[in-house]
Length: 414
Ligand code: HEM
Image 1 (cartoon, rainbow, N blue to C red):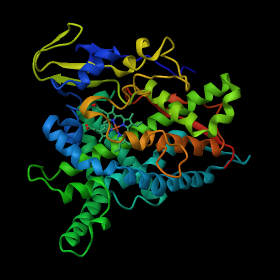
Image 2: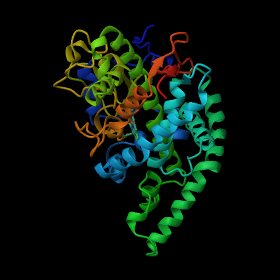
Image 3: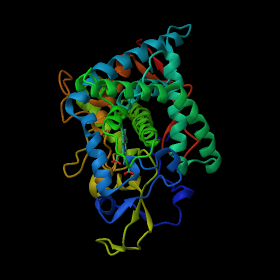
Image 4: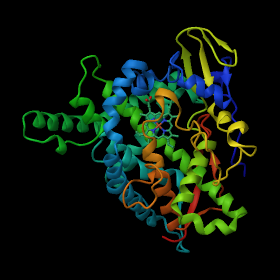
Protein backbone atom coordinates (compact mmCIF):
# COMPACT_ATOMS: atom_id res chain seq x y z
CA UNK A 1 0.00 0.00 0.00
CA UNK A 2 1.02 3.63 -0.51
CA UNK A 3 2.44 4.91 2.78
CA UNK A 4 3.90 8.26 1.68
CA UNK A 5 1.44 10.56 -0.09
CA UNK A 6 1.89 13.98 -1.67
CA UNK A 7 -0.04 16.84 -0.08
CA UNK A 8 -3.05 18.01 -2.06
CA UNK A 9 -3.73 21.55 -0.76
CA UNK A 10 -7.26 21.51 0.72
CA UNK A 11 -9.91 24.08 -0.38
CA UNK A 12 -9.37 26.13 2.78
CA UNK A 13 -5.96 27.37 1.53
CA UNK A 14 -6.57 27.55 -2.18
CA UNK A 15 -5.98 31.00 -3.64
CA UNK A 16 -3.43 32.14 -1.03
CA UNK A 17 0.36 32.18 -1.55
CA UNK A 18 2.01 28.82 -0.80
CA UNK A 19 5.59 28.31 0.35
CA UNK A 20 7.17 24.90 -0.10
CA UNK A 21 10.95 25.49 0.17
CA UNK A 22 12.58 24.73 3.51
CA UNK A 23 14.47 28.06 3.61
CA UNK A 24 11.42 30.25 2.90
CA UNK A 25 9.18 28.40 5.36
CA UNK A 26 11.92 28.85 7.96
CA UNK A 27 12.17 32.57 7.16
CA UNK A 28 8.41 33.14 7.52
CA UNK A 29 8.02 31.13 10.73
CA UNK A 30 10.92 32.96 12.38
CA UNK A 31 9.94 36.43 11.18
CA UNK A 32 8.52 38.99 13.63
CA UNK A 33 6.59 40.50 10.69
CA UNK A 34 3.96 37.74 10.80
CA UNK A 35 1.36 36.58 13.30
CA UNK A 36 -0.49 33.30 13.71
CA UNK A 37 -2.95 32.76 10.82
CA UNK A 38 -4.29 29.29 11.65
CA UNK A 39 -7.43 28.53 13.66
CA UNK A 40 -9.48 31.52 12.52
CA UNK A 41 -12.71 29.51 12.27
CA UNK A 42 -11.97 27.44 15.36
CA UNK A 43 -11.83 30.47 17.70
CA UNK A 44 -14.66 29.13 19.94
CA UNK A 45 -12.31 26.25 20.84
CA UNK A 46 -8.81 27.76 20.64
CA UNK A 47 -9.41 31.57 20.77
CA UNK A 48 -6.74 33.49 22.76
CA UNK A 49 -4.96 30.24 23.64
CA UNK A 50 -1.16 30.10 23.45
CA UNK A 51 -1.28 28.99 19.82
CA UNK A 52 -3.32 31.95 18.61
CA UNK A 53 -1.66 34.87 20.44
CA UNK A 54 1.62 36.48 19.39
CA UNK A 55 4.70 38.38 20.45
CA UNK A 56 4.77 39.96 23.98
CA UNK A 57 1.55 38.42 25.29
CA UNK A 58 2.58 35.05 23.81
CA UNK A 59 6.02 35.29 25.40
CA UNK A 60 4.47 35.93 28.85
CA UNK A 61 1.99 33.03 28.55
CA UNK A 62 4.70 30.67 27.34
CA UNK A 63 6.92 31.63 30.26
CA UNK A 64 4.08 30.87 32.65
CA UNK A 65 3.70 27.37 31.18
CA UNK A 66 7.42 26.54 30.90
CA UNK A 67 7.63 24.72 34.31
CA UNK A 68 5.40 21.97 32.91
CA UNK A 69 8.23 20.94 30.59
CA UNK A 70 11.22 21.15 32.94
CA UNK A 71 13.40 18.05 33.22
CA UNK A 72 11.93 16.80 36.50
CA UNK A 73 8.37 17.30 35.26
CA UNK A 74 9.12 15.33 32.07
CA UNK A 75 10.74 12.55 34.09
CA UNK A 76 7.72 12.39 36.35
CA UNK A 77 5.23 12.25 33.44
CA UNK A 78 7.20 9.56 31.60
CA UNK A 79 8.18 7.27 34.46
CA UNK A 80 5.19 7.64 36.77
CA UNK A 81 2.39 8.18 34.27
CA UNK A 82 3.20 7.17 30.70
CA UNK A 83 5.03 3.86 31.25
CA UNK A 84 2.43 2.35 33.64
CA UNK A 85 -0.32 3.57 31.35
CA UNK A 86 1.17 1.90 28.28
CA UNK A 87 1.29 -1.39 30.23
CA UNK A 88 -2.25 -0.91 31.50
CA UNK A 89 -3.62 -0.25 27.99
CA UNK A 90 -1.88 -3.37 26.63
CA UNK A 91 -3.15 -5.41 29.56
CA UNK A 92 -6.72 -4.34 28.76
CA UNK A 93 -6.22 -5.53 25.14
CA UNK A 94 -6.00 -9.11 26.37
CA UNK A 95 -9.78 -9.12 26.46
CA UNK A 96 -9.73 -9.11 22.64
CA UNK A 97 -8.01 -12.49 22.35
CA UNK A 98 -9.46 -14.64 19.53
CA UNK A 99 -9.94 -18.44 19.49
CA UNK A 100 -6.36 -18.94 18.20
CA UNK A 101 -4.97 -17.07 21.22
CA UNK A 102 -3.95 -13.95 19.27
CA UNK A 103 -4.96 -10.50 20.45
CA UNK A 104 -6.54 -8.32 17.75
CA UNK A 105 -7.04 -4.59 18.17
CA UNK A 106 -6.89 -1.24 16.40
CA UNK A 107 -3.63 0.69 16.75
CA UNK A 108 -5.27 4.14 16.41
CA UNK A 109 -7.68 3.40 19.28
CA UNK A 110 -4.97 1.76 21.40
CA UNK A 111 -2.58 4.71 21.12
CA UNK A 112 -5.38 7.16 21.86
CA UNK A 113 -6.10 5.27 25.07
CA UNK A 114 -2.42 5.27 26.04
CA UNK A 115 -2.11 9.00 25.52
CA UNK A 116 -5.42 10.06 27.01
CA UNK A 117 -4.20 9.91 30.59
CA UNK A 118 -0.86 11.63 30.01
CA UNK A 119 -2.78 14.45 28.27
CA UNK A 120 -5.14 14.58 31.25
CA UNK A 121 -2.26 14.73 33.75
CA UNK A 122 -0.36 17.53 31.99
CA UNK A 123 -3.57 19.52 31.46
CA UNK A 124 -5.08 18.93 34.90
CA UNK A 125 -8.14 16.77 34.25
CA UNK A 126 -8.89 14.30 37.08
CA UNK A 127 -10.41 10.84 37.21
CA UNK A 128 -9.38 9.55 33.78
CA UNK A 129 -8.75 6.18 35.38
CA UNK A 130 -11.16 3.32 34.61
CA UNK A 131 -11.48 2.01 31.02
CA UNK A 132 -14.99 3.53 30.86
CA UNK A 133 -13.85 6.99 32.04
CA UNK A 134 -10.81 6.85 29.74
CA UNK A 135 -13.05 5.92 26.84
CA UNK A 136 -15.46 8.77 27.55
CA UNK A 137 -12.58 11.24 27.97
CA UNK A 138 -10.84 10.17 24.79
CA UNK A 139 -14.09 10.46 22.82
CA UNK A 140 -14.45 14.04 24.12
CA UNK A 141 -10.88 14.89 23.06
CA UNK A 142 -11.49 13.48 19.60
CA UNK A 143 -14.66 15.57 19.26
CA UNK A 144 -12.96 18.70 20.60
CA UNK A 145 -10.16 18.02 18.11
CA UNK A 146 -12.68 17.96 15.28
CA UNK A 147 -13.96 21.38 16.39
CA UNK A 148 -10.47 22.80 16.93
CA UNK A 149 -9.34 21.79 13.44
CA UNK A 150 -12.63 22.58 11.69
CA UNK A 151 -10.66 24.49 9.01
CA UNK A 152 -9.51 21.15 7.58
CA UNK A 153 -12.85 19.36 7.92
CA UNK A 154 -14.52 17.84 4.86
CA UNK A 155 -17.95 18.39 6.51
CA UNK A 156 -20.00 21.62 6.66
CA UNK A 157 -17.93 23.89 8.96
CA UNK A 158 -20.69 25.78 10.80
CA UNK A 159 -22.54 22.54 11.43
CA UNK A 160 -19.35 21.04 12.93
CA UNK A 161 -18.84 24.06 15.23
CA UNK A 162 -22.35 24.04 16.70
CA UNK A 163 -22.35 20.26 17.11
CA UNK A 164 -19.02 20.23 18.96
CA UNK A 165 -19.90 23.23 21.18
CA UNK A 166 -22.88 21.23 22.42
CA UNK A 167 -20.65 18.21 23.06
CA UNK A 168 -18.20 20.44 24.95
CA UNK A 169 -20.93 21.16 27.53
CA UNK A 170 -20.87 17.46 28.42
CA UNK A 171 -17.09 17.53 28.74
CA UNK A 172 -17.27 20.52 31.10
CA UNK A 173 -19.91 18.84 33.25
CA UNK A 174 -18.22 15.43 33.45
CA UNK A 175 -14.51 16.24 33.49
CA UNK A 176 -13.41 19.85 33.26
CA UNK A 177 -15.73 21.49 35.83
CA UNK A 178 -14.99 19.13 38.76
CA UNK A 179 -11.23 19.26 38.00
CA UNK A 180 -11.21 23.07 38.09
CA UNK A 181 -13.22 23.14 41.32
CA UNK A 182 -10.72 20.78 43.00
CA UNK A 183 -7.79 22.94 41.87
CA UNK A 184 -9.43 26.15 43.09
CA UNK A 185 -9.87 24.55 46.55
CA UNK A 186 -6.26 23.33 46.63
CA UNK A 187 -5.01 26.79 45.66
CA UNK A 188 -7.13 28.30 48.45
CA UNK A 189 -5.56 25.85 50.93
CA UNK A 190 -2.12 26.82 49.64
CA UNK A 191 -2.93 30.54 50.05
CA UNK A 192 -4.15 29.89 53.61
CA UNK A 193 -0.87 28.13 54.40
CA UNK A 194 -2.49 24.67 54.75
CA UNK A 195 -0.62 23.25 51.76
CA UNK A 196 2.87 23.79 50.37
CA UNK A 197 3.42 24.72 46.72
CA UNK A 198 5.02 21.31 46.14
CA UNK A 199 1.77 19.64 47.12
CA UNK A 200 -0.15 21.39 44.35
CA UNK A 201 -0.65 19.37 41.13
CA UNK A 202 1.83 20.18 38.38
CA UNK A 203 -0.47 20.90 35.47
CA UNK A 204 -1.72 23.64 33.17
CA UNK A 205 -4.99 24.41 34.97
CA UNK A 206 -3.31 24.74 38.37
CA UNK A 207 -0.72 27.10 36.88
CA UNK A 208 -3.38 29.26 35.26
CA UNK A 209 -5.57 29.56 38.38
CA UNK A 210 -2.54 30.10 40.60
CA UNK A 211 -1.25 32.94 38.42
CA UNK A 212 -4.61 34.35 37.31
CA UNK A 213 -4.37 37.36 35.01
CA UNK A 214 -7.23 39.88 35.27
CA UNK A 215 -7.14 40.36 31.49
CA UNK A 216 -8.22 36.77 30.91
CA UNK A 217 -11.87 35.89 30.38
CA UNK A 218 -13.48 33.16 32.51
CA UNK A 219 -13.49 30.63 29.66
CA UNK A 220 -9.84 31.06 28.68
CA UNK A 221 -8.60 28.13 30.83
CA UNK A 222 -11.15 25.90 29.06
CA UNK A 223 -9.83 26.92 25.64
CA UNK A 224 -6.20 26.63 26.79
CA UNK A 225 -6.98 23.18 28.22
CA UNK A 226 -8.63 22.23 24.92
CA UNK A 227 -5.45 23.27 23.10
CA UNK A 228 -3.32 21.12 25.40
CA UNK A 229 -5.61 18.11 25.17
CA UNK A 230 -5.94 18.22 21.40
CA UNK A 231 -2.33 19.23 20.66
CA UNK A 232 -0.89 16.55 22.91
CA UNK A 233 -3.00 13.61 21.85
CA UNK A 234 -4.07 13.91 18.21
CA UNK A 235 -0.58 14.64 16.93
CA UNK A 236 1.15 11.70 18.62
CA UNK A 237 -1.79 9.38 17.86
CA UNK A 238 -1.32 10.16 14.19
CA UNK A 239 2.47 9.74 14.38
CA UNK A 240 2.63 6.25 15.93
CA UNK A 241 0.75 4.39 13.12
CA UNK A 242 2.95 6.10 10.50
CA UNK A 243 6.05 5.09 12.44
CA UNK A 244 4.90 1.47 12.76
CA UNK A 245 4.03 1.02 9.10
CA UNK A 246 7.33 2.53 7.96
CA UNK A 247 9.24 0.25 10.31
CA UNK A 248 7.20 -2.72 9.03
CA UNK A 249 8.22 -1.88 5.46
CA UNK A 250 11.81 -1.18 6.51
CA UNK A 251 12.18 -4.56 8.22
CA UNK A 252 10.69 -6.29 5.14
CA UNK A 253 13.35 -4.66 2.97
CA UNK A 254 16.14 -4.88 5.58
CA UNK A 255 15.53 -8.12 7.55
CA UNK A 256 18.99 -7.77 9.12
CA UNK A 257 17.66 -4.73 11.05
CA UNK A 258 14.69 -6.57 12.61
CA UNK A 259 16.60 -7.17 15.84
CA UNK A 260 16.84 -3.37 16.20
CA UNK A 261 13.14 -3.16 17.04
CA UNK A 262 14.19 -3.01 20.70
CA UNK A 263 17.09 -0.61 20.12
CA UNK A 264 15.92 2.71 21.57
CA UNK A 265 18.36 4.79 19.50
CA UNK A 266 17.14 3.18 16.30
CA UNK A 267 13.49 3.68 17.33
CA UNK A 268 14.21 7.29 18.18
CA UNK A 269 15.59 7.97 14.69
CA UNK A 270 12.69 6.06 13.12
CA UNK A 271 10.26 8.26 15.07
CA UNK A 272 11.99 11.42 13.84
CA UNK A 273 11.73 10.21 10.23
CA UNK A 274 8.06 9.31 10.58
CA UNK A 275 7.14 12.75 11.90
CA UNK A 276 9.34 14.48 9.31
CA UNK A 277 7.35 12.76 6.55
CA UNK A 278 3.87 13.09 8.08
CA UNK A 279 2.92 16.47 9.44
CA UNK A 280 0.19 17.14 11.98
CA UNK A 281 -1.77 19.46 9.65
CA UNK A 282 -1.73 20.35 5.95
CA UNK A 283 -0.15 23.79 6.49
CA UNK A 284 1.01 26.38 9.02
CA UNK A 285 -0.71 29.68 8.24
CA UNK A 286 0.62 33.14 9.02
CA UNK A 287 -0.66 36.72 8.46
CA UNK A 288 1.69 39.59 7.54
CA UNK A 289 1.73 42.46 10.07
CA UNK A 290 3.15 44.86 7.45
CA UNK A 291 4.27 44.75 3.79
CA UNK A 292 7.08 42.18 3.65
CA UNK A 293 9.71 41.34 1.00
CA UNK A 294 11.21 37.89 1.50
CA UNK A 295 14.86 37.10 0.76
CA UNK A 296 13.93 35.61 -2.65
CA UNK A 297 12.12 38.85 -3.62
CA UNK A 298 8.52 37.62 -3.06
CA UNK A 299 6.33 40.40 -1.72
CA UNK A 300 3.52 39.88 0.77
CA UNK A 301 1.04 42.64 1.55
CA UNK A 302 0.04 43.75 5.08
CA UNK A 303 -2.81 41.50 6.37
CA UNK A 304 -2.19 38.93 3.61
CA UNK A 305 -2.45 35.30 4.79
CA UNK A 306 0.17 32.84 3.54
CA UNK A 307 0.45 29.06 3.79
CA UNK A 308 3.69 27.33 4.78
CA UNK A 309 3.30 23.85 3.32
CA UNK A 310 5.57 22.03 5.69
CA UNK A 311 4.99 18.62 4.08
CA UNK A 312 6.91 19.52 0.88
CA UNK A 313 9.34 21.69 2.93
CA UNK A 314 10.15 18.64 5.06
CA UNK A 315 10.90 16.70 1.84
CA UNK A 316 13.12 19.44 0.36
CA UNK A 317 15.98 17.61 -1.40
CA UNK A 318 18.41 20.47 -0.86
CA UNK A 319 18.10 19.90 2.89
CA UNK A 320 17.29 16.20 3.38
CA UNK A 321 19.06 14.72 0.33
CA UNK A 322 17.94 13.18 -2.98
CA UNK A 323 15.83 10.49 -1.32
CA UNK A 324 14.11 13.02 0.95
CA UNK A 325 10.65 11.64 0.13
CA UNK A 326 11.47 8.20 1.54
CA UNK A 327 11.78 6.80 5.06
CA UNK A 328 15.36 6.19 6.19
CA UNK A 329 16.07 5.76 9.91
CA UNK A 330 19.78 6.25 9.20
CA UNK A 331 19.30 9.68 7.64
CA UNK A 332 21.76 12.29 8.85
CA UNK A 333 20.72 15.93 8.94
CA UNK A 334 23.66 17.77 10.50
CA UNK A 335 22.32 21.28 9.77
CA UNK A 336 18.67 20.97 10.69
CA UNK A 337 16.50 19.17 13.25
CA UNK A 338 15.88 15.56 12.14
CA UNK A 339 12.11 16.19 12.27
CA UNK A 340 12.37 19.40 10.16
CA UNK A 341 9.26 21.53 10.80
CA UNK A 342 7.17 18.74 12.35
CA UNK A 343 7.03 20.79 15.56
CA UNK A 344 6.72 24.09 13.70
CA UNK A 345 9.27 26.90 13.96
CA UNK A 346 9.75 30.38 15.42
CA UNK A 347 7.79 31.51 18.47
CA UNK A 348 4.99 28.94 18.13
CA UNK A 349 7.37 25.95 18.05
CA UNK A 350 5.67 23.07 19.87
CA UNK A 351 5.97 23.48 23.65
CA UNK A 352 5.43 19.73 24.15
CA UNK A 353 8.18 18.51 21.83
CA UNK A 354 10.31 16.98 24.57
CA UNK A 355 7.36 14.89 25.78
CA UNK A 356 7.35 13.28 22.32
CA UNK A 357 11.04 12.99 21.44
CA UNK A 358 12.51 12.77 24.94
CA UNK A 359 15.26 14.84 26.48
CA UNK A 360 18.52 15.18 24.51
CA UNK A 361 20.17 11.99 23.31
CA UNK A 362 19.59 9.87 26.43
CA UNK A 363 18.27 6.40 25.76
CA UNK A 364 19.06 4.29 28.84
CA UNK A 365 15.83 5.37 30.51
CA UNK A 366 17.35 5.31 34.02
CA UNK A 367 17.33 9.03 34.11
CA UNK A 368 16.14 11.54 31.53
CA UNK A 369 13.43 10.50 29.08
CA UNK A 370 12.98 8.79 25.70
CA UNK A 371 9.61 10.33 24.88
CA UNK A 372 6.25 8.87 23.91
CA UNK A 373 7.18 7.61 20.42
CA UNK A 374 10.07 5.40 21.55
CA UNK A 375 8.27 4.11 24.64
CA UNK A 376 5.09 3.20 22.78
CA UNK A 377 6.95 1.58 19.85
CA UNK A 378 9.18 -0.47 22.20
CA UNK A 379 6.13 -1.71 24.14
CA UNK A 380 4.34 -2.64 20.91
CA UNK A 381 7.32 -4.69 19.69
CA UNK A 382 7.53 -6.40 23.07
CA UNK A 383 3.84 -7.30 22.69
CA UNK A 384 4.64 -8.81 19.24
CA UNK A 385 2.89 -6.25 17.01
CA UNK A 386 2.09 -7.37 13.44
CA UNK A 387 0.04 -5.56 10.83
CA UNK A 388 -3.06 -7.65 10.00
CA UNK A 389 -2.26 -8.93 6.46
CA UNK A 390 -5.96 -9.55 5.74
CA UNK A 391 -7.20 -6.14 6.87
CA UNK A 392 -4.77 -3.40 5.84
CA UNK A 393 -4.79 0.09 7.42
CA UNK A 394 -6.84 2.83 5.74
CA UNK A 395 -6.53 6.62 5.83
CA UNK A 396 -9.09 8.84 7.53
CA UNK A 397 -11.74 10.28 5.23
CA UNK A 398 -13.04 12.78 7.76
CA UNK A 399 -10.40 15.43 7.20
CA UNK A 400 -7.45 16.48 5.06
CA UNK A 401 -5.03 15.30 7.76
CA UNK A 402 -2.34 12.81 6.76
CA UNK A 403 -3.57 10.22 9.26
CA UNK A 404 -4.83 6.66 9.44
CA UNK A 405 -8.45 6.16 10.46
CA UNK A 406 -8.25 2.36 10.91
CA UNK A 407 -5.14 0.35 11.66
CA UNK A 408 -5.91 -3.29 12.58
CA UNK A 409 -3.03 -5.06 14.33
CA UNK A 410 -2.26 -8.41 15.92
CA UNK A 411 -0.38 -8.62 19.22
CA UNK A 412 1.16 -12.08 19.10
CA UNK A 413 3.18 -11.95 22.30
CA UNK A 414 0.71 -10.67 24.87
C1 HEM B 1 4.05 14.17 17.44
C2 HEM B 1 3.61 15.06 18.32
C3 HEM B 1 3.44 16.53 18.10
C4 HEM B 1 3.58 17.26 16.94
C5 HEM B 1 3.96 16.75 15.55
C6 HEM B 1 3.30 18.64 17.29
C7 HEM B 1 3.35 19.69 16.38
C8 HEM B 1 3.15 21.02 16.70
C9 HEM B 1 3.27 22.12 15.76
C10 HEM B 1 3.60 22.01 14.29
C11 HEM B 1 3.04 23.26 16.46
C12 HEM B 1 3.10 24.70 15.89
C13 HEM B 1 1.79 25.15 15.28
C14 HEM B 1 1.90 26.51 14.61
O1 HEM B 1 2.98 27.08 14.50
O2 HEM B 1 0.87 27.04 14.18
C15 HEM B 1 2.73 22.89 17.82
C16 HEM B 1 2.42 23.77 18.83
C17 HEM B 1 2.00 23.37 20.08
N1 HEM B 1 2.00 22.10 20.60
FE1 HEM B 1 2.62 20.43 19.66
N2 HEM B 1 3.00 18.74 18.62
C18 HEM B 1 3.10 17.47 19.17
C19 HEM B 1 2.90 17.13 20.49
C20 HEM B 1 2.53 17.99 21.48
C21 HEM B 1 2.38 17.63 22.87
C22 HEM B 1 2.66 16.25 23.48
C23 HEM B 1 1.95 18.73 23.53
C24 HEM B 1 1.69 18.77 25.01
C25 HEM B 1 1.44 19.73 25.72
C26 HEM B 1 1.84 19.81 22.53
C27 HEM B 1 1.40 21.09 22.78
C28 HEM B 1 1.52 22.15 21.89
C29 HEM B 1 1.14 23.52 22.21
C30 HEM B 1 0.55 24.00 23.52
C31 HEM B 1 1.46 24.28 21.08
C32 HEM B 1 1.32 25.81 20.92
C33 HEM B 1 2.70 26.42 21.18
C34 HEM B 1 2.74 27.92 20.94
O3 HEM B 1 1.94 28.43 20.16
O4 HEM B 1 3.62 28.57 21.53
N3 HEM B 1 2.20 19.31 21.31
N4 HEM B 1 2.83 21.52 17.95
